[in-house]
Length: 362
Image 1 (cartoon, rainbow, N blue to C red):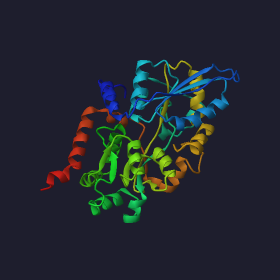
Image 2: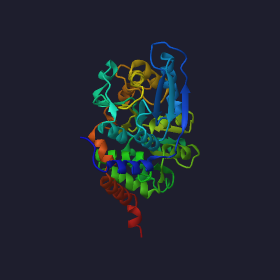
Image 3: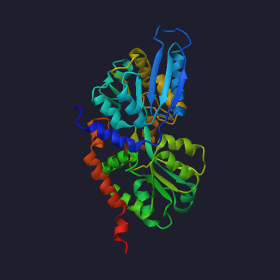
Image 4: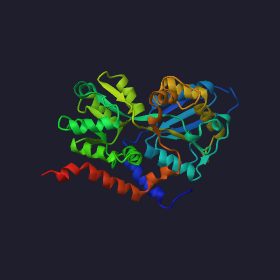
């Protein structure tokens, strides 16, 4: 499958709803002298918070001090738009916007990587040898201690639905989730869940009945959970939620044990990368044992490398949650997310289910 007419306009319009801010943060690690004969420049653009990117960049630069490394942190829209405008300025592109990274690779924008690290990468975590998923991040619930003390801790979507239907009045305005119309992530998760189970729509109706607040970002939800406005947040990005909850004893992260979506950061080398050899070095580090250990030990992003176990790895999460984990499939199905007719149909049903109790109230 290759490009579909009109999909770029749809992608850009829809990506705009996914962007919370226009980030412009920059990290730079200057070259300190020739070590391995490499050219002296590498440019990485990522939709990845600098606090999570920095340990990876520092470790790579320690291995390759002759390479002057520049990292620009952009939101998903800014990253995608800037790449399309100047595809020859960046060596590695990293984003959590899985449909658009796939769209780029599928459209011929990615350079293949045939290194031993790439060839050994799990088939489920790559597309051809052009697009690589290098993190393993569950979509989670976050609950406050007040809710747990009063009603218990919901461990699954079924228990959450029972909680909302049984204690809706007490939870009015105390629950928060994504607004799928304003949030690209929220819409993507809604698509995936509606495919997984028809009971998803019962959950949407229950959210509406409890006057659930709708947010545009995980950060917005976490802020309300921290200050006590909300007692339960649904479908937060687990890597960000874990970092906040670990620092706040009032919050707990719940990975649902019936099913848990897994989203991943995708990396590619642009076909017009100005420093392709250094891009290959960085990708090999990202997919290799050293880079994946940094992800496992110094970030909450979740390492994918099949040989790594213990905390902070996909292996550990699979051991604790098994078949409940549902990674978003890396394939042509992602393009359906960019189909405007499908988007409108899903959003219309979501609004209808969310407001169902309003329509039936006297």
